[in-house]
Length: 70
Image: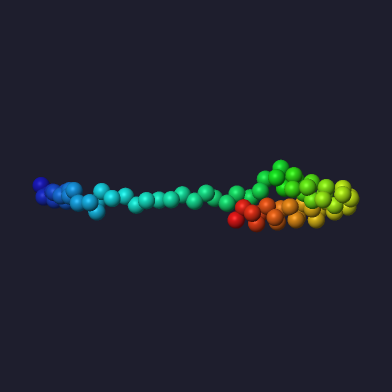
């Protein structure tokens, strides 16, 4: 029969019982389709509703909102 080694003794030292504090940082979320659309519409209205710059409005809105999220 093989000899069994006894388990290591348990200690009640404070070092073993301490836990590390973990702080959760919220993940940066990309702006939603709805928030980009709302900001793009604000940019459109800021130009007095002149048509023809939809893509520029969208890209500017997306860039602004993404920068705010960081």
